[in-house]
Length: 251
Ligand code: NAP
Image 1 (cartoon, rainbow, N blue to C red):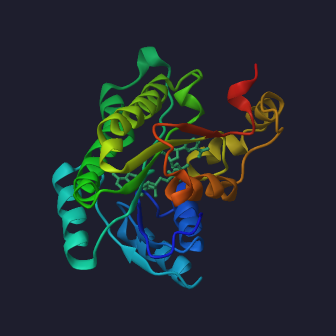
Image 2: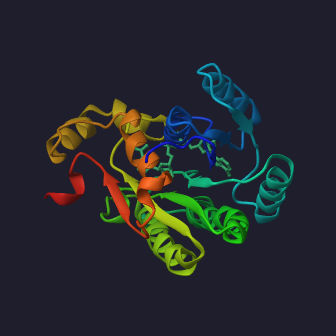
């Protein structure tokens, strides 16, 4: 029920961090994986690591914020290699500043990367999935899908939009056999959060605020992603699955 043998999964922004770990996890469940990143060198190194564990790994470097590049890459992969059965829209960024001073160009860039990209890649992949009558899409949301924090209002807006994009994709595409769901990580140790991990005051606050009492390890996201990508989730549509040590259920 949870096997991904014979499936191919595209994970955006998987040169490092959560995307890399999810790609590794999907490969561990039997999928061939397509790694994507904007940095081809990083992509090659990441692919080598997963290949060394015995998986089939493709490298597909493209900028997820460029709709023409996205369509060319996705259509080209499908034509040359066959179906993309699973898409994980993971690429995303953070930028912190008080909202009254938040640079407008940073806001626009963040929206393109955190939310527009899910539409660009989602649409390009879903066209093929719809023609085949099936597929899985997992959109990476966040604790900030549900809760705000000082200095990251635009990120919060983008991750709230990601959850509603998930609901919209489900509403349009469930009838074509697609399951689209969101995976919402709490606080995980990655390059994106390295400044916060190093900040002792923040780490003490986070440990007190999280019922589980600690940062998450990225390996703890894998089970949820495998579930949402697998036949086990065949009637799960538009759900946002929080993997957060309980931070969004308690005050
Ligand atoms: P990360 O370490 O910064 O990894 C993101 C990856 O995406 C990087 O390799 C980055 O490459 C790549 N990327 C950036 N722009 C791209 C583009 N235009 N096209 C293709 N790839 C691009 O971030 P992360 O912490 O793993 O986060 C991954 C996702 O999880 C994000 O959506 C984030 O919002 C979400 N999330 C993270 C946490 C957490 O605790 N870390 C919690 C909740 C949600 P470059 O480094 O070369 O730019």
